[in-house]
Length: 324
Image (cartoon, rainbow, N blue to C red; front, side, top):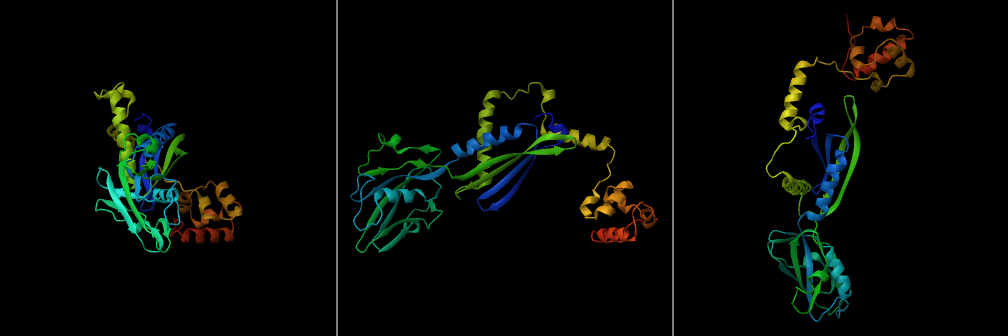
C-alpha cells in the first residue's frame, strides 16, 4: 500500500444494498489518484470477464435462417430470437445444454414455458417470447452455454456443423450496470484524498459481492506476474496492513487525547443568540455545557430569551448546563 495510508489509516469498505442484486460499495480514504486507478481497473474486469450464461443458438422446425416466418406464430424468427436474448439464465455446469420450448396453446408464450434441466435456472420467467394463433405450433431447441465476454455468431459459423441452426450473438456477462465515482475525502488536514464509490447491479446469476471478489482475484493474478518472487523493493516506502495498524497504535499512545468539538451551529440557534455565544468564545456544544447560567447571562447581547433558547436546545439532547 501507499505509505500515506500509515497517516490516514486503512481504507474501509462499506456496502449499501439497494436490492438482492444491486449494491453500492464505498472505499476510502485512498491516496490522491487511487480512486480512478482502482475503480477503472475493477470496472473493466467486471464488464469483460465475469462468467455468465447466454443463448448461443436456436433450432426451429422448418427454419433455416433468422429471416424466416412460422405459420401460426405472430412474431418472425428474428423477433423471437431478440426476445429470447432478454432471458437471463443461471447455469451451474460448464458444458453446453439444450433446453426446449414446445407448445401449441393459443395465446402468449413466456420464458416460463421453457423446459430446462436441473442445472439451468430461468431468472426472469415472465419475459415475453411470442404469440400463437389458433392452430399455431412452436417447437424450439435452445442451446445455452456458460462463458465470458461477447462472442459474435459469425465467429462460430465455421465451428458449428449442426444443420438448420440459427446462431445468435452471445453476451455472457451477468453485469447489468457498473459505475464508479470519485469524491474528495478529508482526514485531518489532508483534503485531497479519494473516496471510491462503486455501483454494481447483476442479473441474479451472481451477487455483486461475489462479482467484486472475482474481479479483484483476476487483477491480483495479473499483477502477481510482475513480482512472482514476492520481493519487496524499497520496503520503507511500502505500507502493509500490519505496519499501518502498528503506526496507528503508536500514534494513539503518544498523542494527547483530543477533546471532542461539536459546533453549536447544529443546535439551530437564532442569529442573535449564536453571535452572542461565538463572540463570547463558545463555539462548541462541549464548551457550552461547561458554562453556568450566570456565565452566559454575563455575555454581551445574551438575555433571558437567549438563555431559554439554549436551555431548550440542550434539553432536546439531554444535556444540561454546569451548576458550578
